[in-house]
Amino acid sequence: MVMNMKVWENNIRRVKPYVPGEQPKDQSIIKLNTNENPYPPAPGVAKVLNNMDVDKLKLYPDPTMGILVDEIADFYNVDSNQVFVGVGSDDVLAMSFLTFFNSDKPILFPDITYSFYPVWCDLYRIPYENPALDNNFRIVKEDYYKDNGGVLIANPNAPTSIYEDLDFIEDIIKHNPDSVVIIDEAYIDFAGDSAIKLIPKYENLLVIQTFSKSRSMAGMRIGYAIGSPKLIKALNDVKYSFNSYTLNLASILSGYESVKDKDYFERGIKKIIATRKRAEETFTELGFSFLESGTNFLFVTHEDLNAKKLYEELRENNIYVRYFDMPRIDNYLRITMGTDDEMDILFDFLKRYLDKI
Ligand SMILES: *Cc1c(COP(=O)(O)O)cnc(C)c1O
Image (tube, rainbow, N blue to C red; front, side):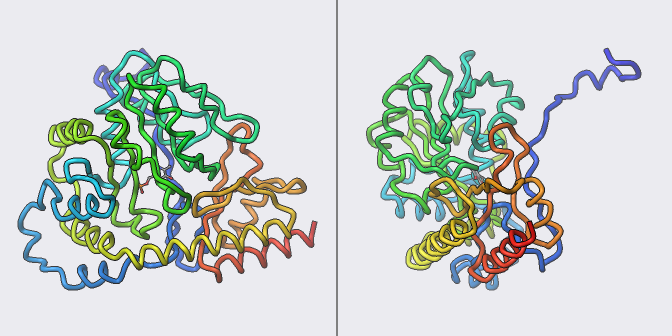
């Protein structure tokens, strides 16, 4: 026991927490650091919040989140008993770790991926192993063909931005009939086919998505999982053992409005993808290279530039991007697609910066 430590302190659960990206108060900052969407949520969201009957807050919200669950089920053409909703996909992921990863065998996820995964493993004391991405930052699918306590793949992966097609994902699922396989699709709407298509074939597949990126609702905290009724029942049983009322009334109502407006959703995605295309061209002109992106961000590097220094210079000039001080990716920056005007300010700065060196 460490000196001066009280006995009760010995019984505190000690964890190394996840460090979220910065949320500066200054509105003039160009915020390209946490992969939020620069455009507002669907207009129906403003309407429902502005007209909310505050008297309803006296009561608990619907613990089943019925109208939202049904609307998501309808959107993806699945049954309502195949949908689980939580407070952002972070909550859905945390609940899934608790529900599905209870083996003595290690769960598997890549060495470079969403950095929250190892934090949950430590919190819940789940053993894990991290197969390395290859030299091109691609997942090596064969690394997931061995005995394990569960498999977790972010597709597209973060912060690499790379999307693997459904055949690739299906190969991993096919080789893991004895584990729950979770595909974290936070960015799928900017990429291609979702693994939701594979759910009728694989009872052990859980797909997790979020309203935070493609639906411009990071502040509302809504995420969901889609899978077989068996997986969803297990998740709900754990949820009801933990906190029956996760989403508040405003989230349930505004989430419903967002999903209902398909047209706005599709137009919003097209806008971000167009900005990404434009940004790819400009980054290339400026001598940057980047990984092929299926997301609303680009993972960029420049042979002549020190990424950490550039990150700091950008910061001093009120442009926030994300830097990871980690082996293999410490000369890269993860840059969220903002509005075209915001991207122009970034590129003007980069042009001047490159002229100076
Ligand atoms: C943003 C993100 C999440 C979390 O999203 P929330 O729904 O806001 O909690 C989960 N996984 C990945 C890979 C992400 O990028």
